[in-house]
Structure formats: structure tokens, C-alpha cells
Image (cartoon, rainbow, N blue to C red; front, side):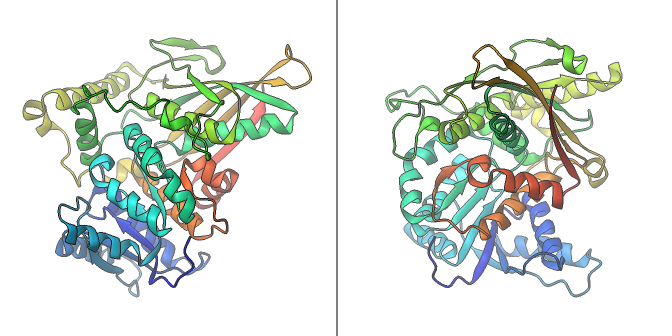
Length: 421
């Protein structure tokens, strides 16, 4: 990354959205934390007045009377004109790190990644859009390698818990002179978990895209692209269940869920670069551990409503949050995620000796939004600490490895455990 003087350490995009507001709130908290190394940050928005109002509201509701508002910069991520492109480029040039919650990322993120890659500015987002990640690898991986910019996707609930679980299992296996063969992760969360308006907007955008044009189909999946630009030999097979299955190790059932393919694709990218196994099997599923029929119905009905709103937004859209809206504070404070991991490793000295391992990654607050914002900020702060010039388009596991796991356990109400079964 360029060593030239930068006016800011971090610039946050998407501050007027639901998760962006939470990220700004967390940045304010970190800035007041005396154990955190001092940093200077700003926000960037299309609507300056709206962004200032959001920030002022945070300050007005803060217990710290000395908290200071960050600078508000102005740029339009859509970049409809050359002057708007230049304005965004000028904003990016002023910082060492960009963190963004502004989705759908395929619509609002492409130019931002382009300028970060070109200018050697580190970048982190909370995208769950695999098509966007593939396009960034195709268009900007080599550029980012040349400039030293780390372009890190999936830095929130999608897909840090799953990505780090597989990373830590592989690390554990290697410490035991084994190779990791397979991993399955199972998501356990409360029935009260709900969607924000931004999630709805992104899901609607993705599922209503025209995918009929196959003329530009690449020779291989861009997720498999190595640093040399070739297709990695380290391939990941999707082992996610297609129907409800028994999980005897956890004494319950599990089944497919809407984010499973995203988690698999993130791990596919990590395996391609970190070389876990040439034929790794990985699957992600939702755990059915409801305490009552009513909680099961609540969780199922929310998913059905989201699907209906995507299919017929004019009819069902009014029943879901608008952009900028999301779960209330009490719901988020009482939320949680427990990610159960079940893996199999094999002794390098014996092709027949297989050992089962188990992990638990637990977050004791809502991770869909509250802790997604915190995770994004913590990855941004880790990028500030980066001392290597190894750039490229990467995942959290590739960019940070165990440093991020340790950071999460230290800074958030979270824990991670792994053991042989």
C-alpha cells in the first residue's frame, strides 16, 4: 500500500443504512476506547445532510459529552458521470482503509473496489454477493496485487464465522500431522432473528437479475484464481444438505438455508488460496433446534415472507423493513449465533486413519447486524495494522487467519473452541 501521507485512517461508506449506522456507532465507541490505538476516521455519503443528521443523533444519544463528530465527505458510489468518478477517486485517495456497508455491492461497490485496488488502499465489506466477488477477482485481483491493496470481502456474518471455522480446523489438523478432509457447519440462531431493509433490497436485486447472457463465461470459476492467475488445484465440493437431515452428533436435525451457498463459495476461495485440501468437502446448513412449534413457525414464516416480497414486491414488500430500517436494539442485544462445526481429518502417515473434530464459534449478541458492524470495523482496524504488501482479492481467512479469530474473542462477547471428538 502507498506510504504517502493520508488524511484519514478509515473512511466508512453506507453510514445512512441500517448496518452502516451500527458501524459508525461502533467506530465512535472504539475511538473513545483508551486500549485502542488512536485513529482518524470519516464517513462518505451521497447525501451530506442526511449523513450529518445520522451522526449528530449518535452524539446526542452518547453518554460521552466529549465525543466528536467525524468529517463527512461527499461522493456518489454509482458514478454516473466522469466528475462523480473523480470525486469518488479523490475521497478514496485520502484514506488508508475503506470499510463499506453500502449494498447491493454489485451496484454500489464496483467503482469503490476499482479505486481502492488502483490506489493501494485496503478495503473491507460485508457483502454476501458471490457474483460481485467473482467480478472483483476477475477485474481487480492483479491490480490489487500490484498496488498492495488488500480487497477483503465477506467481513460480516457473511461469512466470517464459517470461513474462520474451516481455517481453524485446518490449522488444528496440521498441528496434529493430519490433513483436513471435510467440514460441515451448522447455524443455530434465535427465531427472533430478522432482516433489515438493506438485506431485502440486496436479495431482491440479486434474485431479479437477468442471467441469460452466457457469452462471457470464464474458462474457470474466478473463485479458484491463484495469485499467478491460474486455476487452483485445491477444489471445494459443496456438501450442504438439499433436504432435512439428522445430525446425531448434535442430537437434532438440519437443513438447507438461503445463505448456505454463499458460505460455501467463501470457503472455496479460501481453499483455493490457502490450500487446505485438493478435494475438500464443505457444507453449511441451518440447525433445527427450536424449543417449540411456535418458534419454528416464526422462523419459517419470516423466510417465506422474504421470498414472497422478492417475488412480488408490490404485494408483500410493505410487510418488510425499508432500507435504513432493521431489528430493534433489544432484539439485537438478546440475539446470538452458535456455529457448530464437525470436521474430519486424516493422518498424513495413514490414508485409513481418520479422526473427527468438533468446533463451536459462539457470538452472544445478534450477528446479522449488530456484530456484523463490529466485525467490519475490527477487520478495518486489522487492515490498519497490516505490515505486508501482499495485495489481492481475498477472504477474511486469507487476509487475517487466526489474528481475526483472536481479535473477535478479545473484542466481542464471543468464544471459539475446537477439540477432537
